[in-house]
Amino acid sequence: MDKFTISKARRTDAIGREVKLQGWVRTRRDSKAGFSFLEINDGSCLANLQIICDAERANYETEIKRLSAGCSVTVVGQVKESGGKGQATEVHAEEVTVHGWADPEKFPLQKKRHSFEKLREWAHLRPRSNTFGAVARVRNCICNAIHQFFQAEEFLYVHTPIITASDCEGAGEMFRVTTMDLAEPPKKSGQVDFEMDFFDRPTYLTVSGQLEAEIFACALGKVYTFGPTFRAENSNTSRHLAEFWMVEPEMAFYDLDDNMKLAEQFIRHICATVMDECREDVDFFNQRIDDTVADTLATVADRDFVRLPYTEAVEILEKSGEPFEYPVAWGENLQSEHERFLTEKQFKCPVIVFDYPACIKPFYMRVNDDGRTVRAMDVLVPRIGEIIGGSQREERLDVLERRMAEQDLNTEDYWWYLDLRRFGTVPHAGFGLGLERTVQFVTGMSNIRDVIPFPRTPGNAEF
Ligand code: 4AD
Ligand code: MG
Image (cartoon, rainbow, N blue to C red; front, top):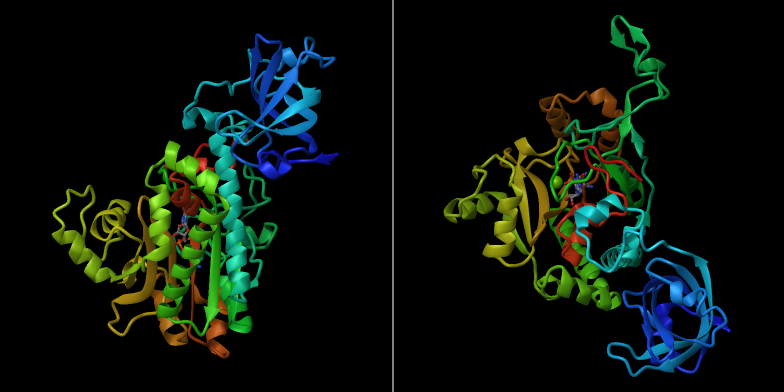
């Protein structure tokens, strides 16, 4: 007899098979005719499987009739055609083994719907709900699509460090890593002496793997890194986490135009793969969470992204007559309300804004001939705003040193980064895609805390 997943047992080609299924009970209903229906779920798909248990089973009165939501079971039985609505098959149980009970007085996930806020308090149980099961499957599918895409394009997957001494984004929003006793740190001339710390210098959790990815791109051509990144920004928004996952491709001999092309193909590939492989989950999100999700995915798959210089974006926003909360002005960052206006109202599709003012972007972006803008690009999508941030990198040593000085960065700390410009420098470019914002985009989930298993935000690190 074969161990089957519920996803497999729901297909008509399973009819007639003797199977073993293992999962958790969602509901039990008893019929007056002397048998019971169980709905069980094992996470292999959104849908449950109906199990029919008749009263002849030895443990019918003692166990089966006591089953409730959350109990874990093994069911052995035969797959049959089902007359029921919304299901092609059902299983007639020959044996039901109970592994674990879940006291219905205490188990929180009862039939009634809970708010996402409430479910965050039960992050250890929420994967057992329909929504979080679907999010987990879509997230997995996206990660797989990311690797598939870059591997097919012949990129090398490289691992960049989590612990670092450099602040890639220059925003100073880093978590410190130390083994020093915070109550009594070693001191030298009244200052904390980091030479006595584990790494002999101040170290942090990385905000981006880009600088190290550049090292590998400048030797091996096309690479990508994909891992957790950390930002200690104190922003309690629906699009910011303190710990999030980012995929960062970096390509030698790419300019900004090549970079934009790649980003567009990449997002397309992710959307197409999710539509293809997670149809049932996408339909669920479209019905229950946001009824624009399926259309958005289809639009992304077949419309070119708009490319818009920052200066033109500012002009459009200024002329729009929209009552923005934050004013628009050349030289200021676009706020998410501005980004959403461009993608949702003005163009109704993803927009790549490029050539941003140098004064609002990090030191490593290539300076344009106008001297005021840099070869930056942000990919904006409806509902989310920025999903990708990237740029062509400054490959000219003298310009890079000047930019670092302007931003008060110590060139000695970045000696190895500057060496890449001293020895065989090449034009190169790359970008970073936020995984959680991508999951939000594809599922329609409005809060980023609900698309990562265990969200880390200011004040929250339970689980
Ligand atoms: O625009 P960012 O800051 O770019 C970089 O870090 C570059 N070093 C990437 C590169 O060129 N290799 O971040 C890239 C993306 C953003 O567009 C956003 O999707 C996501 O990372 N992101 C966050 N996601 C969740 N929570 C946060 N606090 C995020 N900050 C950035
Ligand atoms: Mg950015």
